Amino acid sequence: MAKQRLSVVVTRRLPEPVEARLSELFDVRLREDETQMPRAELIEAVKTADVIVTNLNDKIDHEILANAGPQLKLIANYGAGVDHIEVDDAREKGILVTNTPGVMTEDTADMAMALVLAVTRRIPEGLAQMERGKWEGWSPSAMLGGRIGGRKLGILGMGRIGQAVARRAKAFGMEVHYHNRRRLHAGIEERFEATYWESLDQMLARMDVVSINCPHTPATYHLVNARRLKLMKPDAVIVNTSRGEVIDEAALALALKANEIGGAGLDVYEGGDEMAAELRSLGNVVMLPHMGSATMECRIEMGEKVMLNIRTFEDGHKPPDRVLPEML
Image (cartoon, rainbow, N blue to C red; front, side, top):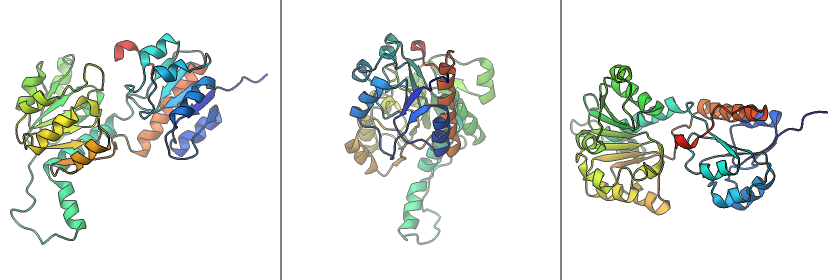
């Protein structure tokens, strides 16, 4: 008798090669359009599915988990961040949570450097000028930005992505500094010629550019708050490609309006449409629609990680990318 295939529900459209392979391997229910699965459908899905493939837009909270049937044993998240999932609650119900770490490192680091260049070299302003047909020719004083070579870059969170940013920044001639929960091994510091700051406050006060590359956890919520923004240089630039909640967005908007810092490059956001509109209105902000991992290669590799975690679970083994409480 053939083994019954796992029932897998995917809450959002994935790249076609990923969906095709999922359909080959499992009894999968895919989304028919690009919209996010409504919460009511998600509640119904967890009642019958063996596995749910979630993404950062799914809030897997106590209510969702309370509705989960006894057959649900795995939440395979399509993404590295799991701050939208109540991991402890899931664990208490005997549900494993996995994610897709590592595969988005290089793409996200590329985007961080792209934002650093976009803000310091005023690239969106130049692009807008050309699109409006307002360019009147080269001028010695037009569209002056700043050189990034020789500037001090402070990396907040020196994990995989932070180190990838450091490698790129070093190639651009930047001085690499970092703040982390734990100091890195001396060999890693030597590789990047990186200076460790135990005090985040002291690092922020001395940096020309700050790149946020730490996850969102209770300990990092609003880690960059109004007080810390006031410590920064008036011409400093802050870039965030991790999670919007790490920065107090309301405080950031006020600091930018008051020219207390020089600019910001954002790919992730905390607030809703109202706050986004306020940030969009500022000339010293570059905003992108969460594109850090948006390469076809990365999104397919994320799908491959999801499938590996599900297949390993199906075979009765521990998935390689389990999210454990001590990781949060």
